[in-house]
Image 1 (cartoon, rainbow, N blue to C red):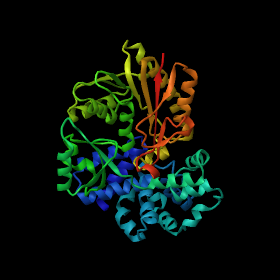
Image 2: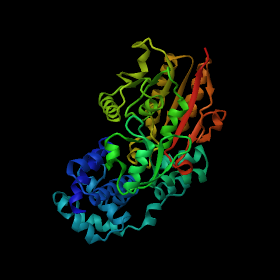
Image 3: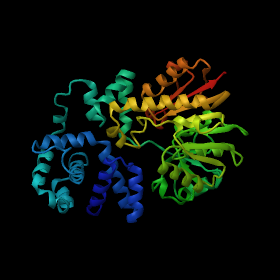
Image 4: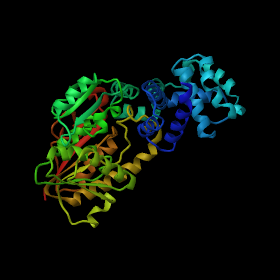
Length: 441
């Protein structure tokens, strides 16, 4: 544990700057060549701290009024969070925490670190619930989720549904992998998995998708992943490509393509002769997309770095089918990306909504007559989903709602049961929304 503390401090500080938990963990594990036990400990420590960040910070806040957690340095803040997690969440003894962390806080003794830790240790869990009278604020503590999110879910559904939903945010959802037909096949991967003691189940209705039920290592550490023979992709994400239903000879556009999970799935469905264009605005994300396609052995996808909101100004192309999976709040991914819970604020939703509306409007200019657009998000918020589609259809009478089949999620009652919604506590996958619209004239 002791040797992992400086790495954990660095990772926590980087995530605060907007980095991804998974990216930072993979980079650190690779750079420092951690063994299996160290890797597992580091993963657990970082994920659990960010899953339970509000409660960890509340313990720190209650321990002292002499400083503000927001005003101390990021490294000091990270060290306090590690210590608090070990004491109050992992239930470690004070001497264990002091022994493992003491050498790293010698330069911040002005905070009275030992005294703060002793005060944190003495805080009883029930004290965290003080003055929390409504259900949303209580569930916020119980399931480590911002109160505004819990309240939003209660208002959107009901108390029981919201409680079941937020309970999944501190659980590990099943991992899914998709066999890459450009480099392998189901038989080869099945044989490989069995030899590595990886247990799995096939997923109904999604050919080549496997649900991992047990593995000794994280999937990215296996050679079949490093060699591009499998793709890590959530069930809901893979379903999106099936709803688009690309056919041979059709021109396909993936408007917000990076990191390439859906793009590569579309290519896999069509084979070598596909006619797919993948667009992304960000240079670094486009680099990731190209590297991913190269690793997977996919050569038929045209990549374009551009702002998809103004794509019609740069091309005269029209597309048979368009996949639009725009940037969103990520509220369906809190289990696998817990940092998003704290990073995206309620005030940020308007920015996402405006962007989503602009992108869907642009898609409507690029799709052929009788063509279709599939709109999907990994968000659970109706403003980013149902309301986007309803508003679009009201403003564009030449489009109509089509069946988003195959229907593996719950039919969306707010959209004539034609769109679908997937939920972590029901479907064992990230929260997702998928709708399809057709251009009639």
